Length: 472
Image (cartoon, rainbow, N blue to C red; front, side):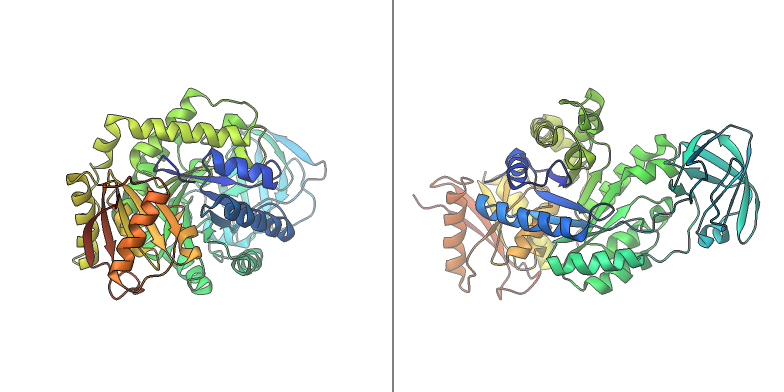
């Protein structure tokens, strides 16, 4: 099985999408990576889904990535004596460390870090921004606020603090337990939630120690201030527009999305656009036209992947959501404007043989009208370098390591295939031609551009480019 489009699809697993039959349908519809959301479900649930994905992918003969998404330090208020209250604009309201059930005038907020980080004049956003409070007085264990935007407020709703860096551990105790479990399972990517600064990524990276790719979710305004450093420390990025859209004005999010995508592309790091892409398909069999345009915008920008959350995890039409997303991707990538916009952003190249060969491969493949660029890769770096060029030619990423193929399933344009290892250059050429023909990417007598590194097996040592012809 191979995908026609270049932009990849990440689908979240949940109650609507966890049986072998449904997972197989999702893969056939276009899913490349499955997300295990550790904010929900038990370890047993995630282990069963992990095993099912691996088994189904093996049956279908296609490397499929698995992303373990950590919950992160979620900030919440405590509970109310009556379960909920109704706040009106102009009301006074207090938040403090007292966990006694809340009333119409106060509620507990068990996060001293918030009290230490805020000052009068700042806003607190509750329940995904539905309720806005402005701080009028702040102490070490309380804040007095005025209700700016009222509404219903119930137990354990989330709290967002725009424009403040909260002194929270990047990984909570739950995150550490979930991370250890996910790594033991063998997930291909770990997503870090609520990254605020480079140190958050560095801490997780030290624990992960190369056992999975590190994907940083950009959903806090403070992360934007350190974007380049976070990209440097990460293996991939995600534009997580949920909390980002809560803490920032809605009009700021599209520009930031494009900025994050472009910065990631320049650095050669995969980037995923996520949240509410086909939200209406949770309950409807087709998306709105605005949602279709939203997906297309991410594709035009050159994102590596677009992600479905509740649409596939808990929605009524999970397969249809993946299918329509795949159709939007293919239609957008056929647009003549797509290549123009794609090539308007030129990646940054290091003065290395590896970058030079990758850039040359894209140019040579287009000039000679090659059927495909074939990369032999051990760590995945060779394939990533070629994908960064966004060539107009298909990219076949060959590796002897299943874990590398699965990780590369997230990357734009790559068709990863697990093949035999090779030690001789002639073996490499023969394998490239055979696999390209077998998967239907090249016909007899068509040309291939082959890149690899010698000595074989040296991570990132891309130093060979060769033009070959598939035998008749």
